[in-house]
Length: 265
Length: 266
Image (cartoon, one colour):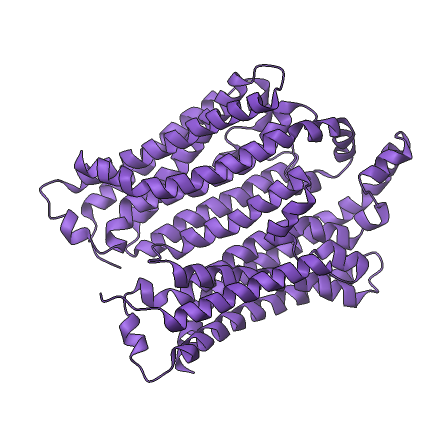
């Protein structure tokens, strides 16, 4: 438990920082939503005349921004990016922080296996990610209450928060795997971050195409589509895919971490 | 010029790859989507006929501006700026925190070179990479402008619009350098660079969602507005000045800190 407590303590400050970003984004966005929705009908008709590629570049593909759900979906796609960058940070931090800080000799000579230590560290990361998804829900509810918006959006927010959590899990475990696979800590972190940037670019490309097809498999940002989440469903197949991907990434991360040379590269 | 050469050798591959990605993105968007975009003008015009004219005016829709090379270029600029910001803040962080990360500050600072000289050489290396990368980007923009714009006769404006990436990127270089110099330790360059880049991206998204004029002063991607450069032939003075002032202040802060800071024993 010592290790877990220490990880929570040292991760608290960055967590608060990321939460602040989330808070500002959700509150400012939702409070402004009514004005955006008032113009919504005109915008929807206007936007529908543009070619798909431009709509996608504006980040408004597949949503109806004259409805609150659609506006929230636009807002959330940026929150997904925020969460993905944070999750990647959490994942690679759990694996390679001791190497970067050059404290690995202190920790890994303690009578605990590497897997034991890594599990505690990843558990702390999981707690932060879960808290982040929950706070997303809480902030959204508070903002809507503040605004006095009619209607019950709890289920909508819950669907978005759950998918946020799963997407975060995929990126977090992926970053952990990369951090464990590369000998140089910075290379591992770089690979994890590049995947976030790359898959985000793919997500925009996905929006640009009329028939993206299998491209959806390649980018976790589109595992849970706006239309589905606003419509009231969560794609079960992709939910299971997330779980499967996490399991694979974690398996590789633990295996590699058990066997790798520890060093301060 | 040892430091300059060393930093250049260490970082040029990354900068070159980013340049290729950035230019590829530009070419892909313009060759792939510009023609379809220009064609959609007819549909939009027809639709606007059904609305009262005041509506279109309220949205500031000037169709001649929107459906032009410049209008489309400005749509994509968000993404060029995102990639450029990650690249530039990465270079700033990487160069100015190198000795801190590798815990060899004392090695560099005991050499018979003033700290301002070291700072200048590092800055020069960063500038060299960013400017080289932007020369490629601007050249690509101008060639595409020549080839794809319906009437490419305002090369001066196109050049100014294409240069807005360079100015934006310099701002992020200053941000990166400042963080690198002030942070107690830099654990991961790429992590911080991604966070800074997406931070700018999110601020920009927030601005376009809220459409609050005041927010533009904290929107780093819009200080040098490519669309305005295309249509008016100049950036908006107060925003461009804000951007330039922030860049300069951050750079000076970084310089002061780099030349004065105490170096902790290892």
